[in-house]
Amino acid sequence: MRRAVPLQLLSDRDHYEQVVKAALEAERSVWIATANLKELMVEDPNAVPGRRRTRRGNYRSVLEAFTELARRGVELRILHASMPSRPFRKSFDGQPDLVAGGLEMRVCPRVHLKTVVVDACLVYLGSANWTGAGLGAKGEGRRNFEMGIITSDEQMIDAVQERYDRIWRGAECRDCRLRDECEMPLDEM
Image 1 (cartoon, rainbow, N blue to C red):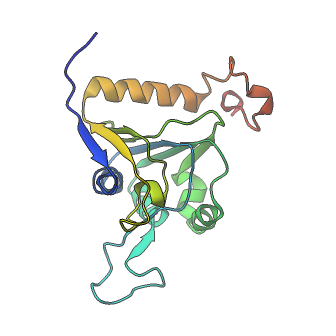
Image 2 (cartoon, helix red, strand yellow):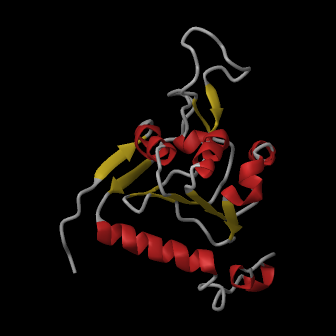
């Protein structure tokens, strides 16, 4: 059935302004699906203009921000296709609240979708992986060329969450032709 759906087209820096910032302001949940999972640096709201706070300047790992969200009870999920980058793993390991379950992560080698659902009120669908080059606060000459859409349409959000949750729960594992190659089929978790 065709129907009108409110959409906003995003490109390049819009991803950071609309998707990342929405995730950082979540009140209930952030569900992320990405093929590549790398360290993502975000602007540090505590940085003092003109004064470097850390060796990273005015930026911090998104995982530091996720720790704050987890402490407020926000459900954090990342569904990804392969081993996260070494810098991501190092940063993750330095966040005890996330390691203790504040951020749930599951691997499925067939995940290629890129989506972010925030508070079941906003969904992003597009080309950008959860990486600095895809969504991050990198400068113009360092970001990937990305495009995607965001919407607050309830039916679309429900459809995306249903698909995400089927993969998350392993409902797709039984018929998967890569099951024998999968290190940890989700339906066995």
